[in-house]
Image 1 (tube, rainbow, N blue to C red):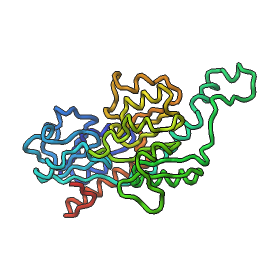
Image 2 (tube, rainbow, N blue to C red; image 1 turned 90 degrees about the vertical axis):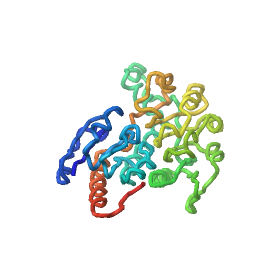
Image 3 (spheres, one colour; image 1 turned 180 degrees about the horizontal axis):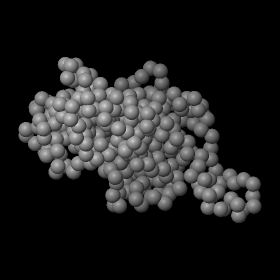
Image 4 (spheres, rainbow, N blue to C red; image 1 turned 90 degrees about the horizontal axis):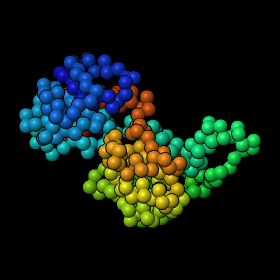
Length: 315
């Protein structure tokens, strides 16, 4: 068996892939330009990808792969219809990053609500020393206790965020296509209007693309904090940038972008100087323990496939 990692660089450089050698030959590429995917994938039985787009254009008409293993939960970068036509199995990994993404979601929200970066800068740039005053309470920050935390999407991550939000004393509201019974479920309009913190945890598909659009952003409280750790395209990035710049929302935390990395022409480039902004480079999913768990799950998926099982199949 030959396994090919087409974009292993997205998994970090601190983990060994040697455990995959017991399957056979392993070819590893840090990144692969779309024009090189067909060539590099040729002769491989299993392709492991995180972000690379796999479809007819990139894999061609005569792929050798029998299985595509996604090093991720989302699979919008793989053409499932093409894979079914070619008889290629597709597996994802579910639940591996719940703890890490929850941790980053809550960290972003708390940092923005408390203005931690501004207070940190005030001390580090010498202003605190020069002031001669024992404390500084500007910008004003507010307790999270009693605030309303709106959660859009209620899978493993959304539910975990809800538990933490409750522990912090928040009222939790949920927007979910299929309502749950253990938390209040409301319309998207209501959750936008009511939330002090609004965090996005939905997959990217036709229904969620541009879900948080300009119209719904206009419904947010001027003090609302928006956190997107889902997919960049589930929100109107230009509208969010405008809202932050114009003071129509209180803070913005983002870990995901419609194009990654985003270009100098991206709407967020114009707001990089905003103090109530926290941008991270799509790292929320990638705690060390998370990535170890991810590789273990991928190996289990390969074992299952070649044993006749359908573990984690999405095709």
